[in-house]
Image (tube, rainbow, N blue to C red; front, top):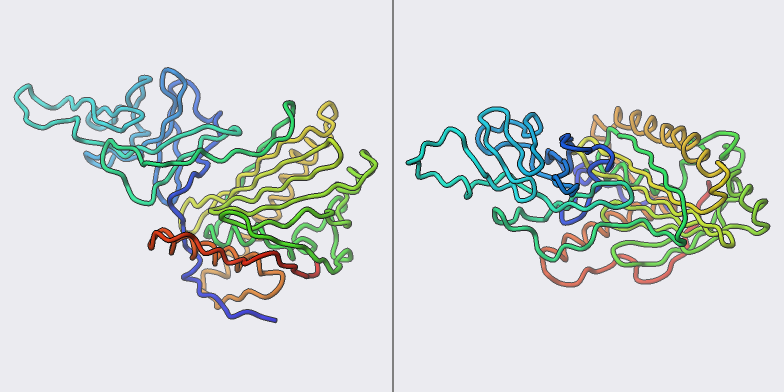
Length: 365
């Protein structure tokens, strides 16, 4: 059964009030400044003399010069245009060299925007508040930045990233789409068009998202067959989607596990970035999983980004779009979750979850 179409105007929503990965931690070393953009907000990031990460709006409030063009001494960022200096963590102006001794202007009342910063899983995360707080005052009641779940003390970690020239909504519903695999990701090591068969998966509501309940992974995927050969038992996988942009997958096989998180971060209205992070304890002494992730993974992601680039060419004409049952039901839940979240923020009432309880979906892929 087909669902009613949805307007391209719906495909632009960037949700504030959440943490987003701005860049990899290894991008900011010493007194080097780096730039990023989240939700069309330009950021300059760095580390203070104690190694703590910071994020400021990359605009001097004087004339709009990017602060990233300036210098950093370990405590304050100096604008290259007129030498104004701003505290790295609060954004408070510390000095205006052109002021005379009798000037009545108070530099300490001037702020470049600052944003809460945390590091986790090899990323610098930045919190983008719903509303800009008062100058010099941090947003209140901020949760901790997201963490990738791990299930033992020793494990390996890997990262992949790619930009996609579409809105964050198109990036996310592409990420959760279960039906494109045999067409976009055809390969000897994954699956082919000939392997398409009917599937049935159980879903359940979770806080701010939904879960594909623990199940046996696709029998037409070579990596899962290999895990069964190694451990003598079939693996199970659980997949969660959590607002605003996170897809978690946990594969368990005896004492072995693989935990992944993919985030689709809005950069601009027409550009988003996929960040993929994986941790595992399976055969850490043998480069099996790392080869799959670091060698085959980029090819897998490249197939997705090439598809998104082609899709972007069609989206320029604002086509009427549609979602169908059951394969597109997770995409519909995503839009419903966003709407429920925004209504809860507006009204102050608890969020009304679009899933009343467990549901089974069926599709072919």
